[in-house]
Amino acid sequence: MSRGIGTWLRTRLEDLLEAALTRLRRAPSTTPPTLYLASTQDDSTARVKPVQIGSWKVLGVIASGASATVFRVVPAWAPASKQHYALKLHASSLSAERDARSRFHREIRILKGLQHRNVVGMVEAGEHRGQLFIVMELVEGRNLRQALDHQKPQLTGKLDWAIQIARALSAVHRRGVVHRDLKPENILTTRVGVIKLADFGLAVQDELQKITRVGLLVGTPAYMAPETMMGHEPGPRSDLYSLGLVLYELFTGCMPFKAQTVGEFIDAHLAAAPVPPRRRDASLPASVEAIILRLLEKDPDARYQSADELREALEASLAEVVGIARAAQEAREAGVQVA
Image (cartoon, rainbow, N blue to C red; front, side, top):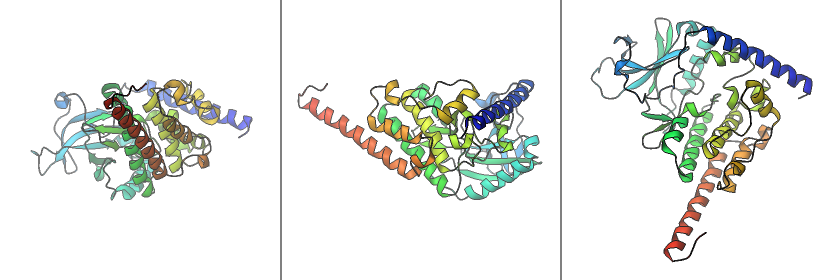
């Protein structure tokens, strides 16, 4: 891409984001919801009267944002059930948009039959008084960012998480779905360490992400692939680039680029070379660094070509790490000093 086009694109994206931020500043202060993730706080104090949405009885509010509210619900025909679900009710203004409704129904048709251990399960989708809603499995746990702050997993645990994410992406991609917004907040972990991929293209974007409606961007700028930045339709390999950014954070605790503003992220994704992960953490295995750097290739053809190919590489790296650890343990048991 020429320097002139790159400058125009960056200026255009910054103008769009500034307009979105201006709308946010004028809007009431709300916290964007972590979709389908059970609140770690007691939601019995939620200021909501018990109501029914479709055939679901509302027990309380899990989270609320500008674009939607997520409720804890049970089937209305079984109000005493201990099996709770998450119902996401889109804002009426967004539900009325033709593009949003079309995307919602298209993704619902694709994902309705998807059942996978590592994907948040969909139970029902419908409309309530003109507002779109979707009922999903309720994940009792944390998102990936919260889990990293609280659990401090070892290297093998991080590799296991990475493998589970790759399996989830593989299942979604096989259904013809591109996640489009892969980031730590959309990757959930249960209390027993099972990864659940959530919010894969079903939700109407929050205000900051509404620039997607002009056909330039789909997703969150900090986690977007270069080809998406350039206005191309995102594909499975775009998700893999985003996953590369997530894994970089997972294994090093930081992002691969020195960027803070939207413009700096655009420049970084389009042209900057990521800092090699082992410069951030020298103890990281070379195989893990190689996987991450391949995911972050600017050219989609240079990345892994499928989530299954990535999973195989991660499984090989995990086997290597476990083998080294086992050999070191056996050496110690034999009285051999291990450096």
